[in-house]
Amino acid sequence: MTNLIEDLKPDVAIVNQFLCIALGGNSFIHAFIDELYSKEEWTYYEAFQKCEWKNNSLFSMYTTKSEGKIRQVAGIVAWSYQSQQFTQVDQLIKKGYKYVYQYMKQHTNIDFEHFMRSFAKRQKKSIVKEIDLIYQNIVLWYLCVRENKTFNQSNIAWKSFIQVLVTSINESEVENSLFSKKMRDQHRMEIEELYKKFGIPKNQRFDSIGSLLEFLISNNLRKIYELSPECPTKKAEEQVFQDSPAKYIGAIGGWLKILKIHELDATEQVPLTKIDLDNIFLELLYAKKYNHIQNEEQVLFFITCVYIKCLSAHYQETKQIYLDQSKQEYYLEMKSKESHIHEQEVKLIQRQREWHLNNDQKQREIEGLTRNLREANAKIRQLEQVIVKMEDYSDEVHALRNYLYWEEQHDSHVKSGPSMKTMTEYIQSKRIIVFGGSPIWQQKLKMEFQQIEFVDVSEINRDISKIQRFDAVFINTNVFSHAFYKKIIKELSKTEVPLYYLNGQSNVENTAVEIYKWLTD
Image (cartoon, rainbow, N blue to C red; front, side, top):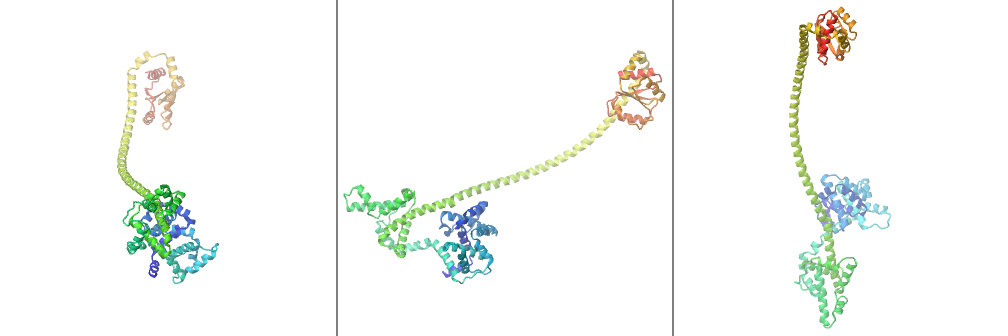
């Protein structure tokens, strides 16, 4: 015992496993455990699967609900040590063992005897449950170990507390020690005597607990017929459940039915090996030795052990399905999906990388084409300017050509033209502007054609953009300025207004004929 106590002191793993039991066994914080665990459920589950407490025999001794919570806490504690982050563990301790946490912070030197007295005083109940006190001590022990805080290990309180923990560890190992092959062989003769007493051949093999119970009933029924061969079947069947050891099978089986358990189904579903039956008889021997079970009680004890074995098997199977199998299947499913998602993410990253490479290439191509387009547009603008200049010159050349042709055909135009009145009315109906000509010439025309606007060659700085609103522009070639001429040509390039040339004849009628002819051709 002393060696085991010494071994417990520095072993952080043992301290942690008892911490898991203290936290998971505290029903007050079960809801909080669920809340905390659900935030990172599969992270904590995976941490538990990898930790050394996964198949802890101490954990499996607790009820399904308590073991479930202990496992959840174990996952959180395992993750805390793996990541060296203890916030979640401290939250559980503060929630379930607030006084322990405060005591730890308020005292430099920890004494478990002083702590237990302090804890007992602050309890409203006159009696403090032993399990509550043990759990309080476990949490305090954990905090001392984790924070490297010294504590008194010489007093009776500490030694008693550790002895309780050692006992619990021994209890979890009882099957391996008390029910080992060595112990069965050591008590072989006594076990075989019990086989004879219950009328079970030592080499008899049973498929299930149900087949053992059926054998015991049939064996007792056979004994009734051996004593009373003429006994009616119905009476014999009643007697076997009233006056023989099989009465305990009927009584316990009946109680199971009341508890909503189908006794025949339950017993048939549990296999029974030779070793299982040997262990039941070995337990009977221990009960006779240590619990003073009398000979008249041993049949009831044996039948009870058989049924407890049956219920225990179903209970353990249910726990395994609830705590391990269902979660394991779901976990594996989640891991499979996680792996599939990871593969898809890798493919997506590869596709994104390829897209970026293709996109960069296309961007470079676009940039090259954009440069080419800008250069092409620049060339187009240059050509357009050339074309505009060419069009400017072409309009000018066309007007000059017509002017020369007019000069050659002047006499015929004068002779074949309409009356002066007709020409004057037509010219007055048009919006006309005339550039150049002598002031006298301009004055004569103004008297005849009030609608015509005249611009003198001296007005070279005048804004002439309004020519875009006229129907025709005329230039008197006799009196004109070259600079003004270029200005007019540039402005006309922006519009569709036609340009005509006048030779500046002094005769108003001839000028009228000339203007009329240009407007009507």
